[in-house]
Length: 164
Image (cartoon, rainbow, N blue to C red; front, side, top):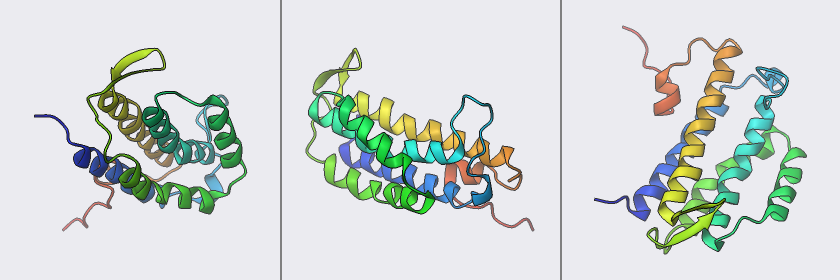
């Protein structure tokens, strides 16, 4: 059994839901937190997440990565505050629902020097990217003192139920 386009879209939309849940836990005073000097700050990570999915979906749909458009998206995101970034991320579920139907996930393409199906690229670049970077955000939150966060938050996109 193969993953359907509808299942892929639902998975991507769920990733965005979880990401927004975690982003709602950010203390705005800690947006510049970065674990080490060369890692992205919290706001930089969110800015990246605001363009990652849309940029990669475009590359997958068109069959090539547009570095110039990516650079412009990076520059535009760098100018946005948290609320604008969260609005951009909040628009991604609709974008996935609009852009992915009708794509033949079995078609082969070469992207970033890797020849695989469109489905493979979408899962391994976009879906996996969401999961990886939301985990990074979760770890940033934990490092910033959000000790109450748990796997419920990371994997379920919800707060843990109250203890009896």
